[in-house]
Every structure is written in C-alpha cells, then in structure tokens.
Amino acid sequence: MSDRKRIVLPFIQAMPVIFKYQFFTKLLISTWLFLMGRVFRLLLNSTGRVAVTSGDFVFLFGHWQGILIILCAIFSLFVYVALDLNTKTILSRNLLIGENVSVWECIKEALGSIKRLLSIQGVGVILYIALIAPVIGVGLSISLTKGLYIPTFISSVIAGTPLYMIAAVFAVLVFMSVGIANLFILHGITLDKLPVKEAGKQSKQLIRKNWKDYLKQNILFFLAMLAFLIMVVLVVLVIPLALVQILPLPDGIKRMLLVLVMNAGVLLSLLVDLFATPLYIMKMTQLYYAYKDGTELNYTAQVRKIHSYDKYSILIGVIAVVAVSVVMDQHFDSIFPQGSDVKIIAHRGGGVEAAENTIAGLETAYRAGAYGSEIDIQRTRDGYYILNHDNNFKRVAGENRKPEEMTLEEIRKLSVDGEPVPTYEEVLVASKGKLILFTELKGDTADRKMADDAVRMIKEYDMVDSCVLISLKYDLIDYIEKTYPDIQTGFLTFASFGDTPLLNCDYIGLEEESATASAISAIHDQNKKVLIWTSNEARSQRHFLCSRADALITDNITQAAGILEEIKNRSDLQRMTDKIRDILS
Image: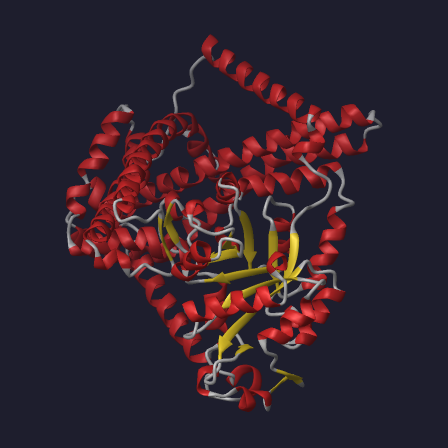
C-alpha cells in the first residue's frame, strides 16, 4: 500500500463506525447540557436573576448559589471532556487494535476516567482544554468552547499597549509550551489509567523524544486529509456549481439546482465538523502507541456487502435533501432575502472618519447615511456631561486627568483632532432629526444620577423617540427600565450566563464573536433588538449585514454603507452563500 493510502485510507474506512459513536455521544452530551442548564437556571432564579452578566460576575463568588454554580460548571466540564474527548480516545484505541466494543462500554470507560482527573492537576488539565486551548489553538479542545475568544475590545487594547502586548505574547508562549508538552496527557490518563502527574511526565518525555516525527506526521496527515477534502468538495460542490452556472438552463431549473447543490455543500460542512476531531484523535492515538512502545497500529475495516437497510438509508437521505431543496426553492425570496434591514451605527460619533466623540463626527456619520451614532458620556467635576470614551483625555487630547477631576471650563480648552469636546446637550441638538443617538453611560461616574440627568435632558429636548441609553452595567440599565419605561435602553454584554434574552432592556448588544444566529434568534424571540459591536472588517460587516441583527456599530461607516449597497445587488448564489454562513455561524 502506498504511503498516501496508508495515511488516508484507514481513517476513511473508520468513518462509519465514528459516525455511530458520534451520534450517541452527541445525544448524551446534549442531554447532559440540558439537565445542567435546568439546574443552573433554578439556582439563578432563586436569587431573583435571569442571567449573570459581564457586569456582575462578582455575584458568583458572594452567594452560595453562585459558588454552587461554579462547582457544578467545573464538574460539568469534567463530564463533557470525558464524553467529548476521552470517549473518542477509547474508540480510537479499539479501532486501532481491532476490538469490537459497544459504544456504551466506551462511554462507561470514559466516565470512569473522571476519577483520575479529580485533583488540582486534573482541574488544571480540564481548564486548559476548555478555556485556553480554544483561544491559543494548541492542544485538544472540547466542542462546547471551541468558539471561545478574547473580545475584540480587549484584544484591541492589548494590541495598542506595548506592555500589555509583551505580557500577552509571553502568556501565549507559556501556554503553548504547556500545551505541546502535554499533547498526550489525556491518552495516558484514559488509556493507561495513569495519575495526572505521571501522565503529564510521560507526555513530556514522548514529545521531547519524538517532536520531529510528530511534526512530520501531523503535516502529512493534514495535507492528506486536506487533499481528500478538496477532492470531495470539487465533486460535490465546485464542479456541480460551475456546471449549473454555465449550462443554458431555464432560470427556474437553474435556481432549483443551485439550492440542491448548496444543500449538499451544507451537509458536507456538517460532516467535516462531525469527523474532524475524532479522526485527529485517532491519529494522535496511533502516534501515542508508536512512541510509547513502538507498536504500529492501523485500522483495517472488513469489506462487507451493502445491506438493504444501507441502500434505504442512502435513498431516504437523498429524498430528504431533494424535498428540503424543493421547499426552499418555493420560498426562495423569503428564505434568502435580496436586501438587508440591518442599520448602520457610527462608533464614537463618526467612527474613524472624524474626530472621536465630537459634533463633527455626528455630521460625518449623517452624511455617510448612518442610521445612528454611538457616543460616550461622563460627568465633570462641576456636574456637566461631556463626551469622552477613556478614563482620561490622554489618548485623544494629551490630558492625563479624568473628566470627573476637571471642570467644564477646563475641558473646553481641550482639542480632539482640532475639534472641541462637546457637552451632551450640544450633541442632542446636533443630532436631532438626523440620527438615533445611542448614548453609553461611561466611566466611574456612570451611576443613577447620570441616568436621571440623561433622561431629563433627553425629555427636555423632546428626543425620547430618537435616543437609546446603553451601558455595560446591567444594574444601571435595569434601573432606567424600571424608573423610566418610556426610555429605550440597551445592555452591552461580552460574557453572560443564563437567560440573557430575558434581561430587562430593549436592545442587547453582542460582541461580534458571540453574535451567533441562534443567539440573535433567542433575543428576537423575547421581542428585543440586537446590536452588534464593534464590527470593522469588511468580511465581518458583510456577515452581519446579511444576518438577522437589527443594527451594526462600526468605526468604518462608509465601508459598511458600500457593502450594504452591494448586498442589494447580489446574485442568487451569493444570497444563498451569505445565508448559509449566517446559519452556520
């Protein structure tokens, strides 16, 4: 057998068995998550909360319910790792050594491995797998947290501060070193039943002795699997799409075939996601035995006849895809809308296209066709409200003092790129009749007095219908909603746990990485609107302008407006592609 076939064929042959195991483990994981979710919500509800947000995580450490939630969450991670990774590791071993063990036996053995992880070192392993590996991309991670990320507004601060950047690079290098050294730690714990410390020691030794071969084998494996995937994509997606586009077919038939091919592409994408991690774990298990005792294991499937139920299963699958495609074709315009209803909101006045948090910024946003502008207000020492984002004026005006340490007269002397720092009243006047003003209550002075004063000024200038008060502090937004129900509010969250859509506000702001299609739908189900913040890259803007979000906060408003125009002239294929990307996000 050629090297290429030896690398790829055993893994392709194992796919039917892996599919069966994935079905049962995914079902079990979903059941476990549902049950634990009910427990967490009961604990939260007993405190009068519907969610724990980025603004009140301290609650978790100050109440017995919060501490119990943390302990249950950590234990849930142990169970999740056992079901999601340890089961796949055990399955890989059974496939490679030729044992025909039932899925339930594999699950039972995987759950049994939890007791060997119940230690301080074990907690460290679990937290690395769940929280660190997904962020730095080194080591195995669980599907539950594979989308974990550092919020853009934090990463931008790190990137813009040399000291923070050095610390972040150092931390990443340290975690990468730890991850690489412990690549085989789960194999030692799960397969050889070693204590965590011994498994870690063994993993370090194996990597130290075999790192060159490990790197080589991984490169060959990924290249081989990539070549196989490219071949499948060409056959299933690229060539059929090209034929549909170039053949002289009637428009109705062409659209139907496009829908059919795209559905096949979606199915292929789901299958890739289903098989990627199990196949890689199988490769790692193969290398583990080769490095540990020199045993070269390879899965060899027995060729069997295709039974009638296999034929029926394939036939049913084909019929289902065709039926779904027919329905989608009949409702094409409603499923794949031509235009976009997502509104564009300029970040900090006029984004990067004008001086930050200035009236000139508002005017720039208005001329660019923005629906609204997001601004930041803080209170001065003598009780006025001015626009500024940071804790002080150092970045924008070269002044180290905070707004609350300065009088309005002193602030009037500052200049932001040649523009004066405006008061909130001046901004209300400048935006009236032109823009919806999203006012973020910012800094140390963001309190109930600020909320009361902002509402008073909004009403004085008759702008209740064209102003939204937003904040990262949920207790402040909740206060405004309860005290001034006629005022529109928005809560900005980058991390929350519980029933976030039930929070007491009109808008919920999602940081772009957390704004999945399911999260947006859940918020809409509670008759609330969704703000995406802060989307600046063209690809990200296109994605969210094609989504079901209500508004997009961005620094690049002209770029977003141009993309919005392009969306109105999309082809059928582009409309389908954009929708599928939104659904799969």
